[in-house]
Image (cartoon, rainbow, N blue to C red; front, side):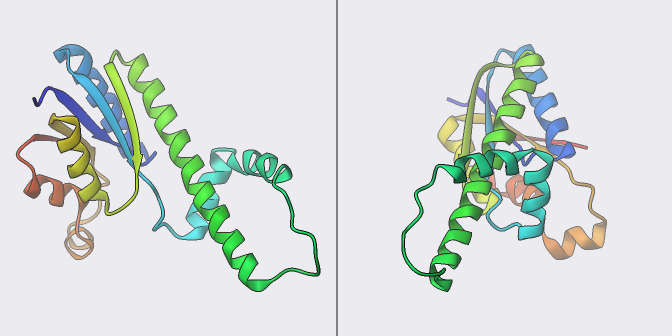
Length: 175
């Protein structure tokens, strides 16, 4: 059955507007709201660090790190350092995703959404949105528009365009 509304969020202002619109529609139409966040694994490390700083996640990460057991032995191993960096990156991505979903859920509740579900996933953003819409039985998908210029949007491609072309669900694009 296609009675749910799915909204995708990446924590951006455009996504916040999409969440607000989807939450309003959920309450008005009496349809459950599914909020999906596709994790930021492909984002450059500098952008992840900025997001982590904005979300005050560095303090949370430091607190978790204090309780992690440390191996005994001689100095650091470059291979272990690379593995530790990847673990840290994965942890930061997961924590950022949790924060983004928590904020979106809270905003949706405040806006009157009903039967809210949240899900984090990883992969190609458009494919994950489409897969989640199908899994959730969403008859409507709400997406935020970034406002890229025409040339940039043509060259880079667009999650919104891919979703529009690949689904039978109603797609609402929020500017």
